Image (tube, rainbow, N blue to C red):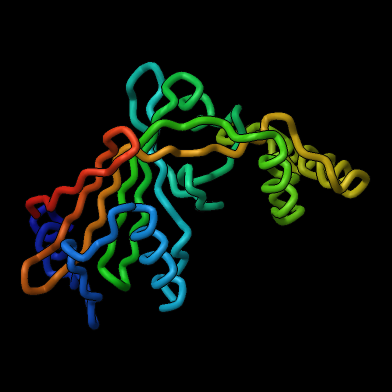
Length: 219
């Protein structure tokens, strides 16, 4: 397929179908967390596929960006929580540059939320609670501690997983020291709503001390 063929094929794909939710930014709450909880709750109740999935963007000391999709684990007054190994690529990035951005995209509703801010490690108790709620197989894979490393030998991989499965079966409360619950403390939020009559509506919240300022952005 030629470059022109791909360009035409991509441009002819439908973007949104069905009825899109209304969004009046002038009626939005003063606290962006309230709006986030409202949108997330609506996405869950409406049957959006994996509404807790979010893309996490980080960059280490080199400045090279890296992005991957993971799961939102909790929402508190402080911000948004996710968990991973501190020895993973994203863990290394955050150790060097403790800032990140996330995006949650709900295609069925034409909605996107972007959040940026500082990242910090939570308590050991939170990390343990998160890890122990994972499926045993997911715990065994994480416990090996070699996330994103090349698999040079399938037999070595299988043996490492089997060893960790046995370890967890013998000690169901085992949590690796490298498992960390991370808190993203938002500095900016952007709520994006597709709207057929005006293309899109964008509302940005920016932190000013203990308050939030709001701007409606050009599409």
